Image (cartoon, rainbow, N blue to C red):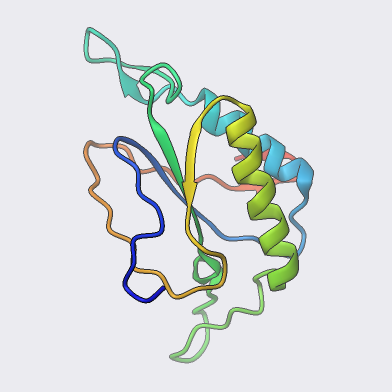
Length: 137
């Protein structure tokens, strides 16, 4: 948005979220529970044993419909598998609010805007989570 910094976090999760038409509030709740409880931060012995809340980490939520790009045919991805903007914006909002209600520090961009996201991946953990029917797979 005009080159201004809209939000930022220090250590924590950068969560890129693609919303599909079949996604629901139940799926958002499952994702909130999983993100809040993931034990991927090192404890005093260096083992991945602590959750984001236990390390006072933050969450950056980035709506990213391009994650749903279908590239099986042709040379240009199809985004027909992405939810309509109204549904996606509502569910992203539920995710942000739910993470806050879980006691986490949360930042997000501006839905539907062109954004430049800078990410420093500090560590060996990058996870792909898929939520289907209220279950994280």
